[in-house]
Image (tube, rainbow, N blue to C red; front, side, top):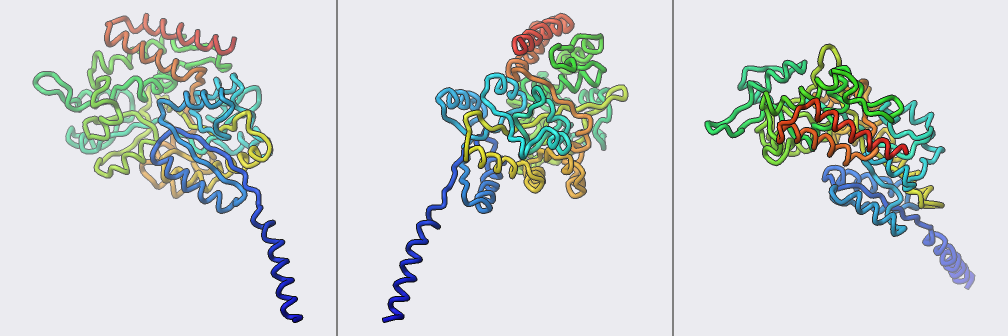
Length: 417
């Protein structure tokens, strides 16, 4: 009887203890990003790892098509719903900060001092009145992709080192049929692709003209003769040198991937897609220099916590964001996605530097400039429209650049005012 009583007592004790174990509270947070296949797959893996290490937190991962991503965010915020953490293009951040959608990053994990000590300098473009509202997992620079087979067919064994060499090689490698139709682009020419970013700030800096004032309040594209020369050089690629055409093979990325473009300026994230195809023999080089100057465009997608995230959800969001921006995650991101981990330690990783595709992008980090967008889509459209005015309406590039600067300045003024 005593043994039976002891057994019953133990059963009752376990029964009483079980609810305490089963009742472990789980905090659920949502993470949103736009659809990019390799990123979606990796984030799913990272969430599984994070949840195994933090069983009291569940992360719901949502993704949406790029073209409708911002509209989805705006609609959810207006309805008082949406994610706890959102992944944004850095050029969208000023608008989100001004509209109160984002809250400052938790200072415990993301103090300004820690960010500026450990992260790539380009992230400071999203610092507002001494406060950071977002932090990226990775950054990226623009580089020169080149088709090794097309270069070899035209007698070249190395990519161009200067802008002059790039134009000379592009002209020689461009091929048209008897009717004059383009068959092979010497250089891709897609203004709404990477070309608008190449113009500002890369090309302007290469010609010796800063794109904006230090306080980000004045557009300087035409502040000197160098700015006009840069825009003329850009439009000459299509109008004079005729090395590429807008929408050839749909866009620049498609033309290069299909082997009908000798050279293309693109971001490091393109590596994952090209490596996935596995059929193109290509190389990557730094953006060619001009008159001794070097430049690249530093961009990034960055993570922010929405203003209405509070309490335990905020604590969980801070913990997940710290995980996403940890060094091990950044190294894996660099290897799998092709974007470069945003911590400066990643750019010094000897193993990554042995990768001949990644190394050129990493080498450009010290001189890669970001551009301060107040409305990235509108700013991009101004450059696209300016190029169209030259190409389609045969307008004077100088007059068009003056018009573009006036339009861009209006955008900037509307933001600061």
